[in-house]
Image: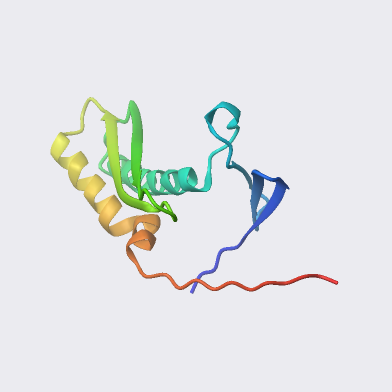
Length: 138
């Protein structure tokens, strides 16, 4: 079993910073669009899914010795109207510019990436147990 840890610290009422064990930082905010400086937690979930699926897709295309001129994935999430506003649907649109890759092989690679190799996609499909502990230092 492999464990990961992050610490999320409040910087202001709507601003947070997440730091992993290696000291890498991610800014997070909950502001509305005009004041937004960072991604929200729900944006980060879409980013995590898109980047996780992208890495595997890109590596598989490179293993096939295909030229990647450009690659990106657009991730769209539809949220529940009530509270909590969790995602009810997520759609990933993979865009590849390559002079020597076929649509069929790219589609196959993307399917493998999303359905088999992406840990984030698998986490979203699985039942995860949550626990919480409250501590107040003296």
